[in-house]
Every structure is written in structure tokens, then in C-alpha cells.
Length: 245
Image (cartoon, rainbow, N blue to C red):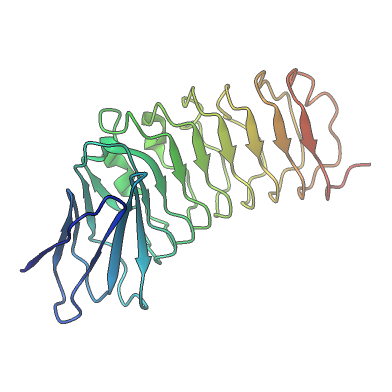
């Protein structure tokens, strides 16, 4: 197995795997990806410590066995968008990550999220899983105690499990365009909540005292009653495209 090293300038660096080999290890300032099979893959690191992966040709095989190791001393952002991933990638030494974006994939299997325990995710603030195939919120989400933004729009989620109500510093929760019918187990300190494009019929006793923006458009709501009475800080409410009388 050959190793390719790339040099970093003050602004950017890139690594491209060799087409002639099926399995290689790429190393760039403490970032390794193994294996990168049948790809032409590029990694870039910019001055703001953002790691971006771009697919240069059609992926022949999912990154099911990929391990991404983060060893940089600085806080970084990891983007793995639009790569047709079917499972949450394995992340080693991920305590340096502040932002993980896995949007526009085909992720259904969230087993590897278990690796992100409370000891290694103290810096993770933003998790973006928009537009995947997730059906259930993983139980281990509640260990990411410092998470502030959770994006789960456009998935296949039917229930909001009680595994996320322990995210006490969560500020933004986006669950739009799923199949949710009951509003429940919302973390108490959320200020922005997007549940548009779901199957919600009733709004019952939402006790979210810090909530400022609520989007319930494009649901099946017929009657509100006193469901919003406890939202004392609410400033924006969207209810278009419902069945209100």
C-alpha cells in the first residue's frame, strides 16, 4: 500500500487518489481516509480549517468501510455531502470536530454514531443529516451534550423519540418533510423548530418557553385550541397549507 503526502500552503491543499490502485491510504496533515476504493477523491483544507470532500467521478461502491481519522489540533468542519453514503461513517478521534455535514446521501444505518460518545464529541455543535433515508432517531443522540443545531429534514422519520429531549443546549431543531404525526419530546431550550411538511393533526400543550420561531406549515392541523398557550416567547408562527377552520 503506497502513501501519498500533500503539502499545505497557507491557503489550501488537496489530495487525489491514484486511479491505478484500488486501495490506498491518503494522508494530509493528520487526516487519513481508508480505504478509498474505485474513486477519484479529493480532500481540501482551507484557511478556516474546513475539510471538504468532492466526488470527481461516479462512485462505484459506498464508503461503508471508510474510517476518517481526525488528528488536527484545530477545530474543524467535516463535509461528506452527496456521496451516496448508506451508513454514518466511522469517525476516529473526532473530538476536534465542531460541524459534521452528511446531507444529500442515502444514510439509513446510524450504528456508527455510537462511536461519538460524550468523551469524544465535546466540541460537536452542528450535525446536518438533511435529505437521507433515516427512519428512526438513533438512541445515542442524547450523548452529544453540546449539540446546538440538529438538521434532520427530508428523511423518513415517523416519531420523535425521547432520546433527544436530553439535548439541553440544542437551539435549532429541523425535522421538516418527514412523516411525524405527534409533536413530542422536543428539547426544552429549543428556540427554532421546523416541523413543516409532516402529518401533524393536533398541537397539544407545547411547553417550550424559549421557542421563538415555529414552522407548522403543510401539515394536517384542523384546530389549535390552547396548544400554543405556553409559548410565551414565540415571535414567528407559520401555519400555511393546513386544514384550519
